[in-house]
Length: 466
Image (cartoon, rainbow, N blue to C red; front, top):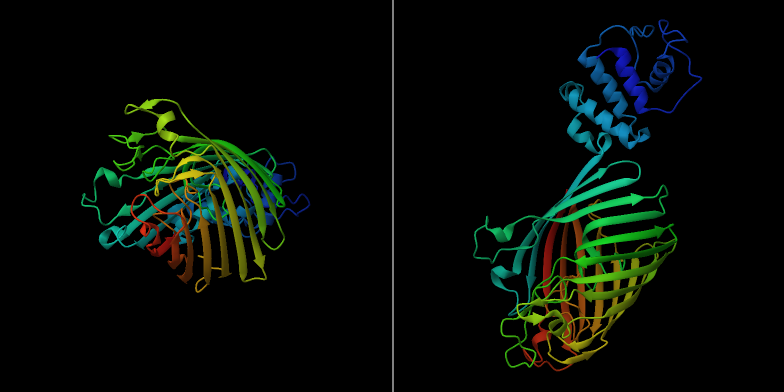
């Protein structure tokens, strides 16, 4: 590649701020040359030095080593390049990868600077125990996730994620069986309208939570297909959207799954009932405070498609379990630099049957309080936190499916305390332990006995980020 061609490319990349008044260091580049402005800017930025410090020699063919030196210097100015310009520099870095390696510039270590694609991921090894529910090999599972994010242009970001979901060590199937398939848990496009305050999100989100990421996450925290518009100016955020839940744990409320009650129940279906997935329209208003505190109110309206599945109409089957709508409020308050107090309240407009207890339920409520001391940060080794929480959930308050809580199994018709600690023992590596205690059943259970909800839960896990 000739020097003047590479100079024109580098100038197009605008790797340095324009300096119209910089002196021309090369005696062989006249002021009326078409390349004069680009050559001066590149020389001023230190991208090119010329020959003997005096001559540019624009007609001379340069060596690959000289071209690699220019690319390496362009990389050093990546913070001033646009998305399109980074893509061009990335192509040049690939072309001259061997020469850059010889210069001590490892292309693999510069991906975050020179590319418009960033890859991240995490791996989790988890142990959960509850007597009679999760024990032995069934207590152990793992999950691996990979995320790729591409900055298409200054306004558009595309994110794609793959997940192995939670694979149980107690399964008797082969490790290569279909139940271990990897699936796409994120397929998302974010678009801003020329302003950082407005963002439109379309596609699939992996961990969507009723109440948003700052709430406790009692209801649902899994794969969700949606269209969402958000305004956020740093002090207040207003979010609205519509979507459909795509995962469930077999309890019937969300994507579908089997809705089954014991044979002695008047709600029993001979073969169970497969239900269509749940859709929701939602809105949320949040306020943010200077010390990192936040408060918000949120609302969700639920609907399910009509139809007849396995001989049981969705209208008849889902009436037993479904909620019409839900509203909630949360407050997360930071006290000093170490303490955080979180309070969360939800009320579900739901008249039907509690799945675990079989009791009649009407507009159940849940109260949650949590106090945390310290802050575990994956980027900061030896950082840690310790927390204690209290949950008071009426029968039927939990909608089924997934949750962002650490808890598992029965989530409602209980009062319960919990405590835990998180410790980052190395950069991007954290160990956590959680334990419930003083758990009581709120109302009598029709199925499983009154002590079914009172079996304490234990959880421990390693999480690695990369």
